[in-house]
Length: 376
Image 1 (spheres, one colour):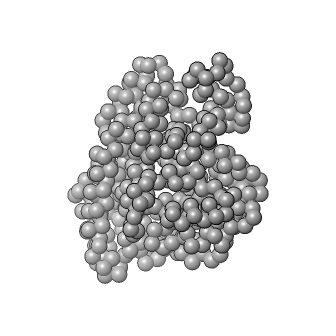
Image 2: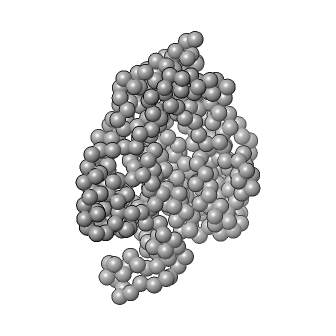
Image 3: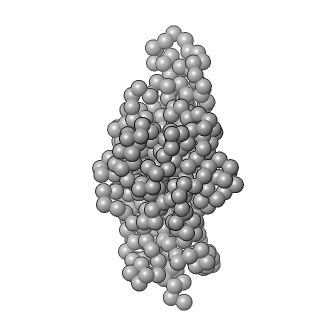
């Protein structure tokens, strides 16, 4: 069986976890958490990075720091994971969904401005498959209308837009280190903070609303409750696992990119014949080989292809029932404009196995099986 995903493992993780245990500091914000934060800051150039228990929690922190209040509207694509919306729904916001581009599956930047009202507070672009949204245009729209931007870069670690890391354009950026991501700590994420003036409050929100971080730096003689917050700190054991992968990011990424390019090369003939559609990488976007997907003709064909792959011991996956059509989406949001592509394209897309350690011969088998399906 060729699995859809295998969590990344380099080999140094166990040693680092052992070191964390031996330090007698396994709760949050120990040595490895600090190392991970510093690594992300150096790698991306943001003012501050704070490791969190998940990307969901990073998004929740961004929502709190954006001062989202009941009645505010937040614009985002419907084709995304529920956490993108949940983080703002929890603050009482109304979600305004707009259609996606069929080439990248990202929010259609040309539709954002028309969805803005006097209640709009923020725009939340989602970098699907680690391929960047058109951030120059989105940031220009946000500036023109005085809106905040929160980047859902859950899938965007190590991806760039015109040479700049995803997650660093908006006021806040959110990474995921879930076991399905390129780099993993099991469950985990990170909040990226662009502007220094937001760092202190972010530390307070992350530490249950206390100024505990300032206390540990010796800036105050005791800490106390100063704001609303929650416990967003991951365990040092998770951070230790992640740090071993951050140190070896090129090993992981180069391997994934090799497999991604192999998929593309082997399946390109099917696209040339008009049978399937392959991912599009726009000019100026450096992606991270987070996933490789193909688009079948329609839902019926995708269902049959997925079943055929399963019969041949290959696990493929689809995801994201558009949020605007889900029960909670109907309750907490509305779709602005026409759903031209969101539902149609989501029903065509099928993700193929992709993970660090996937073998060349396994990709060959997947591609041969896809070709066999369409050759029948």
